[in-house]
Length: 129
Image (tube, rainbow, N blue to C red; front, top):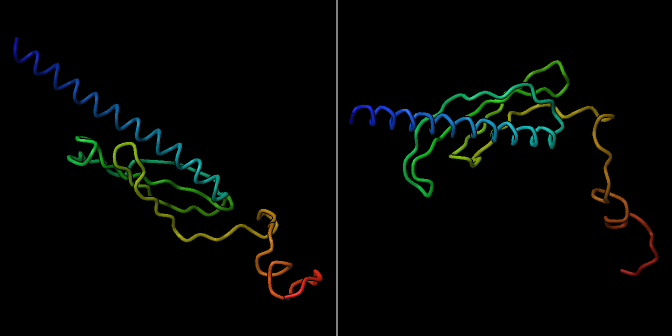
């Protein structure tokens, strides 16, 4: 009777840890999708590289996991980046150096940085200095 209870308890603990790893994988995918859209690159895949139990801190018992994602800037080249997570929190993202998009693909610039009326002597507005 006692061994059955311990086996059931052990299975519940394993299932809970598996469930937490799946939640971390889903959250990392959502985070990577938003980061790739900010960087204007195409997301190809996300995979877990490593996961290990972590004890202490404010979360108690949890997982420390590292995910790798692949992306492309032009549809031909492929780059790899990494995300580190502690529980459900992203602690670090490591992007490789990758080429910027072509000028005709870049978003339109707005503002007056580097010239125009925002710089000294850039335009004659009739104001005294």
